[in-house]
Image (cartoon, rainbow, N blue to C red; front, side, top):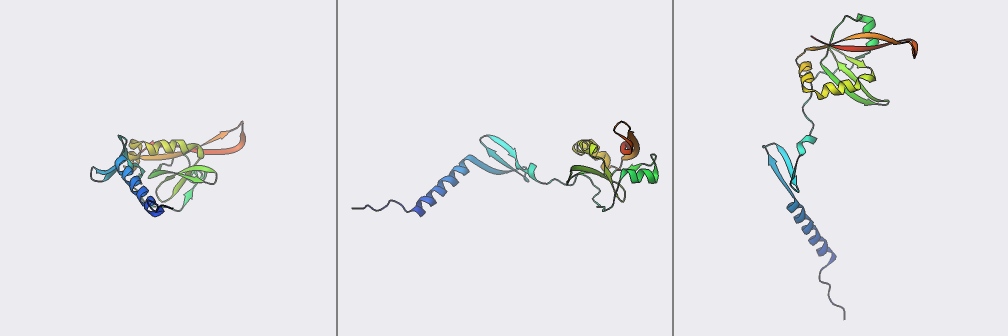
Length: 163
């Protein structure tokens, strides 16, 4: 004679869900910390989950410019004495890897790729960011050559200056 099953598959599945839910509640306690930062305590370790939020904008000048000018173009227009105000420094990833640019007054200045590491350093340095936000940073453009590798080519880069 066949005996009646103790529980249906549906009941077993429901019971497993309850056990798992209770287990998660026992292991992970979620609570609000300092009114607006959600923290998760797991196994005695506290993680600040808010670190994954997008922070406020790094630079205070939020105006966007569509126009990009090259260092060569600006150098030919204004020479090496012109100082361009820096309102922000930015990094992007394009088809050929990372690139960077400066937001100046009314336009963006495309920087050479060897400046990406410098721009990353500036963006991660609160003092440098504050100086840019305070309007105290500018750049000048200089030209240079690499006669051994490219004897007939002129290159351009920048020097930072205090305004």
